[in-house]
Image (cartoon, rainbow over all chains, first blue to last red; front, side, top):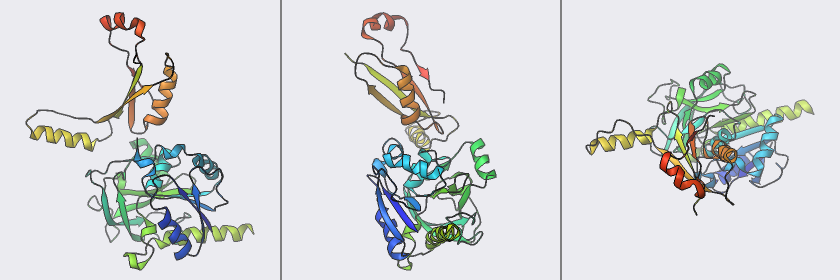
Length: 236
Length: 100
């Protein structure tokens, strides 16, 4: 698997993502600058966490106009795998590649904590190595992670089964107390209708080594590698 | 002469505004009987030349300054200097609601 990690001005999880992909999981990895005219033949494009363009205007609102976003839209339209983490999620929403928008956290505080999320779908490239209903312990670090969509859009997201992760209790129960930021339906991660663009607010790249307190994030990187390898084997 | 185009971006009525709500609570605590506060954003745009194309302002407001999933916008175009005196006397500056 070859991963391309997009670097916007203000990205700050780009090197963590690169390190985990390359060093922890032994996959090929390249950086993609926001002005790059091509995706360097990456199998998976990751939009990492951070504060692209200082979160000015709205989170992700300026980054969506970067030159590389046109390439990413074409790539996604051809079925390419695009994965957003935290700020990367917000950018994909602003670019209309993923549904909804992130409002300020309901408690108005930046939250830096470990949370639990339940895997709602394990038939996607991001979760194919997870068990159905598996609970992952992952860190969050965001100020705008309060998933919002109007009732009609929310219905569509649910009926299309686009929710991949929900905030939950350690035992997997979906409760309001387990919802750190007020996200509707406890949504922590979604996919597009085709299932090739997906994102989550928690940081799997910060939880892929035991030394960092959790290695539950590894399931997601291993899923991507498994999916890409299997696809390569299928197409010869 | 000043030719500022004003754009106001507000959260839609259906969207909860926790910042506005916090401000309201603070005001109530200070003894002000404010029922509701909604916080928004305000932009001043200046263009080259003397004329402003309303469609351009509309496009900028819709595609960049606001996110139509959660926000509405209002545009206030500048009043041309030559007619400013007469217009100011009888009517307020035009306000357009963004329909998105």
